[in-house]
Length: 235
Image (spheres, one colour):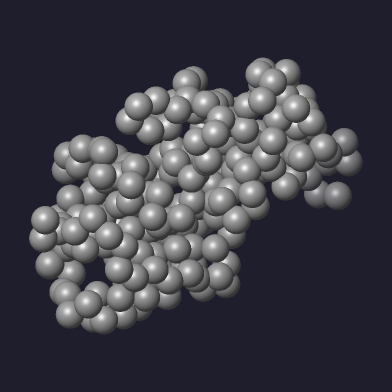
């Protein structure tokens, strides 16, 4: 199959950019947290395409991780993916980040929880079950208090995701944790999950936003009720 796919994963500490030809990843590059902005992302994509003698118009489509994850990183990734898809009229497929992380879990267990830090003692959490066609969601993505999340786990459930390092002390000892190197989504897993998805329509492309379930820290702070200064506005 003569298909060329650009893969963008910007939900974690390290942004990842990959290129697939047919069914195989042929190139992948990591950008550290100081180089995730749109300018560096665009130049990295250009270098990957050039190395494979491809032009942007040769792309079959773009697969992009949509979160949850880094607020700024996801915006950069989605903005870049939407711009390329719109400009070249190629497909755009939006991959749930937790589905890609679950795809990396070992198959010895039949259930895996993926968690990420939602701040203020809360986690993004979603349970996945292993079926004949891969890891599929067993419940919706939720924001839970870290303690409440732990009580929802069945004995022996695997735990993965970037939140493990933050909340490891609250994970019951009967629940093994996936190795640290597999707790953030890789381009290979974003590609594997994205291949099962349908492309977004043009309307869905314009409406696509990061999957947060909550606003940024700045947005939430802005919504907090203001306490009037008893000294008055001129003090």
